[in-house]
Structures are given as structure tokens and as C-alpha cells.
Amino acid sequence: MTESPLDESAYDVLGVDRSASDAELRRAYRRQARQTHPDLGGSAARFNAVQFAWERVGTPEARAEYDKRSSARPASAADTDDADHVWSTGRTQSTQRDSRPKARMYGHPGGRARDRFTTLMREWVGRGTEPVDIYAEALIRRAPSEIRHALADALAEEATARALGELGMGYTVWHGVATDRGSDKWVVDADAAASDTRKIDHVVLGPSGLFAVQSEDWGAPAKVRRGDLISEGLAKGEKPVHALATRAKAVARAARVSFTALVIVLPDDTLDDAITALGRTRGIASFAVQRSVVGHFLRVGVPDAARPAGTDMFEVRTRLQNSIRMV
Image 1: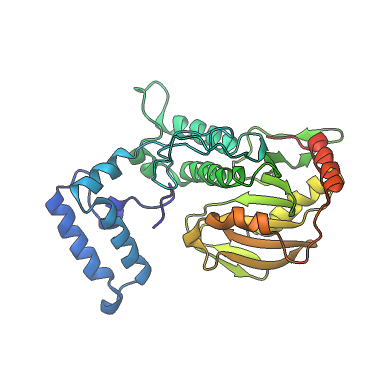
Image 2: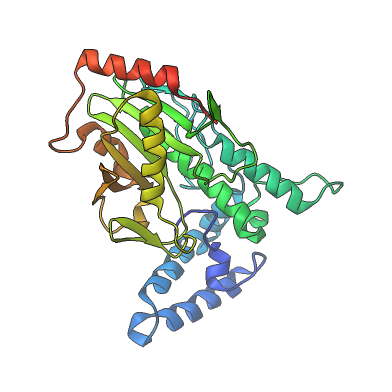
């Protein structure tokens, strides 16, 4: 159980209504702990989820804090370092500004997914009804999967953007890079799904190389199979690494540049290892990386990969800046 819109709430895991009394909650926890305990034939993963849920609502203080976290404020690219009450972590970030130079960033991380979430949620709730808080946790938990996936996509991109901003002034980052191109211009389909194949979430250029970075949250663990990633949260036949390689090739051809690596960023608890090498996809080194270490990975770069010299990096940045269009 992670802190994601795709997960069950703590109350769902324990099998009680949100309005349950503290005594009912305690009885439900004990019952679930017995039923899911591995020594009694239960599932270790489910048992851990029950413990995690109890940590969130097991005391009046923890429960009050959990219930209070019912909103997720959209964060802009310029303000992603101190967005508070972000769903994906449940932690309040410090509002004190960090004076260290940030990476140069363009675009709005998660903006397209936020727009899609807002549109879908308002259509689902219905027009002409009383105004509602579309970020209320109880409402989101009841929403159809497509709506929760849109919010999860936005939060994943915003979380990665915060890490990328900390790379420092030697790095340039473009968010939401369009990858469909017509005869003479990039094509941006406003009706496309938030997780479609028409964009790369982040293109990162720095002293360690040029990276195509995709932020994902599939709501389930990911495993490696034949150089790609599989997960119960993916549609049948979906190949996220291969799809990212196709998008990266489109940008590379248009800008006349070469990518150092493809990077799929996932929540920490959905990957077994912090960094997993996936081999080469369409000639590009590919990796799955836990979200907490993506900054470290991009600073260190890929062993034995060519690194751009100062003048070369300036040329690559100019080509990208002249070519990239954002959704």
C-alpha cells in the first residue's frame, strides 16, 4: 500500500467505513491482522498493507491527520519544491526557499494530466450539482480507474520534477515534450490520454548526458521481462520502455541529437532495486529507477557512456531548444 490515488484507503484495507468508531476500527484491525498473517496462511503483502493502514489511522491523532489530508494542490514547475499536502507522499514540505541554484526548467510537469483529471472528474460528478472539492480523498477513492490514473500520472510527474529541479544549474529540463510531428510542426492532441505515447514527461540535459525520463505510477509492483517492464497495473501488451524509446527516437531525429539513456521512474516500493539496468532498447541504454534516487542516477550518469563537453552540450541544448515543443 503506497500513498497513491490508485491504492485503497486505509479504511478500505481494514474493511470499515470512514465513519467507524475507534473501537470498530480497532476490532477491524485485529480481525484483518489475523486473517492476513503469513503464519496463518495469509499474504505477506496484504499483512503489510494492514499494518501500514493501522499506522495511518490507529490513534486518534494519526487518524485526524490522515482525514485532514484530503486535498492535493496542483504544483507548477516553478513551485514544485514546496508544494504541501501532495497526495503521493502525505508529507507537508517546508515552505522555506532553498537558495541553491536550481536546474533550468521549461514546461509544466503534470499539467496535462491535471487538466485531464479535472475534466474527467467534473464530468463524472455531473454538471449542475452543488460545487464539490474534486480533490477530496473520499471522492477520489470512489472515482473510476481512469480518473485515479490521471491524478496518479500528474503526481508522479510532479514528484520527479521536484527531484530534477535539485540537479543544479548545470542541467536543463523540458517537461511534457511532444513527440508526434506533422509535415512541418509538432502535433499536440489536446484530447489524448494523459499517459499516451505523444509525449516524454521529462527530457534532461546535463554534464552526464541526455536522458528521456518517464514518470509512472501503475499502482502495482513492476518486474523486468525481456528487457521491458511488466505490471498488473499495465494494459495487456503494453511495453513502456519500448514506447519511450520510440518517443525518444522521434525527438532525437528532429533535434539531431542522441540520447544517453531511457529512464522509467517508479515509486520506490514498486521496484525491488534502486536502479535496474534493462539492456538496450532501440540502441539506447534503458533503466528503471526508484523515484528517491533519480537525481543521483542522473548526476552519476551511465558508466562508460560518452559525456558531452562544454561546447558540445551548448550545441545540444540549442538544438533541443529550437526543436522541442511542449504539450
